[in-house]
Length: 338
Ligand code: UT7
Image 1 (cartoon, rainbow, N blue to C red):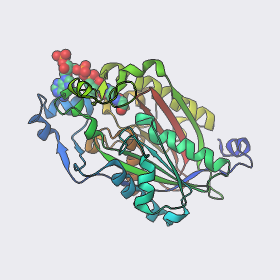
Image 2 (cartoon, helix red, strand yellow):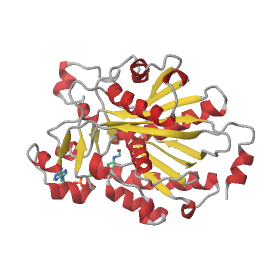
Image 3 (cartoon, helix red, strand yellow):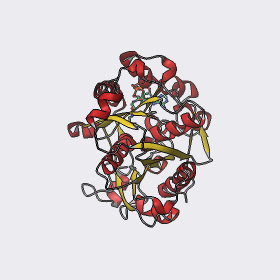
Image 4 (cartoon, protein in one colour):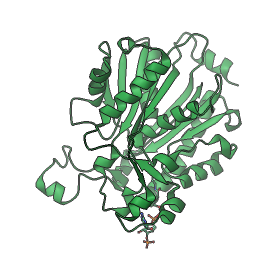
């Protein structure tokens, strides 16, 4: 293994560990039966094609930062860390509260993390894994001691509720991780991040930016709604997540059999199964909760990690793989010791 290898590789550099997590989903649940009344779909189609049964939808007055702040409060409480002790807040989201200020600043104000500096990152569904890698770098250089990494999304506000090919897939929610260097803990062993901007057309939110500033025309064209070429995205998601998971395992000096838990991005049960067939490892190692939350984009991996911990699926020293894929395309994998 790897502990010796990774300790040698990172000799003298502070290691980053997730010391606690928290998550929050809105109370309103939208079931497949509810969707049957909204668009031309069936519970059977949604369940067999995606594995999703229901998803949580935020209230109209509930913004991404409200959900992110609640997840952060829970993570900080679980860590026993005061908000004043947070040095950096990174929010990963494609549904920020507004164009600017950044959503991390709104979270900062809500939780009272007055000593933190704050920024957002946009890596779509890979956002939390990318954010964790950023936290790792700040901690590794000694620039920050406590980093709050949050994945938070209100995907319902960029969803065309008349488009059956998309509206059945997504949900709202947030998760947060407190990341610190802890003596004696190996924490993050390896991470590999990848992108391919030549495939940006396959999954996007075209309107509202500098390319198509919001106007009556862009709204009439529906450019303020997410667009996806589902079949193409599916194929790339499987190939890219399998490849990057292998690369991260290689970099950590581990094989899939060394892992105790695998947390893939929660987009589609068929994607998770296809990765499982290629990567190997016992099916029960793959944690899946997309049946109850749908695809929560940047929040999906951290909501699943937090839930897995609360369900007793993680013990200290367990080895965990996080792997995600999203628009951009972006994808990445992190291998860590819990
Ligand atoms: O988080 C970022 C990454 N996102 C993903 O990873 C999502 C990747 N893509 C997928 O998960 C799948 O491609 C979908 C779940 C989006 C779609 O599944 P699919 O098996 O690829 O279906 P399809 O798009 O090929 O559509 C098959 C049929 C079509 O009808 P025809 O053309 O065969 O007559 C669709 O019009 O299913 C139809 N269809 C639906 N039928 C009932 C599409 N959406 C629905 C629906 N209910 N909600």
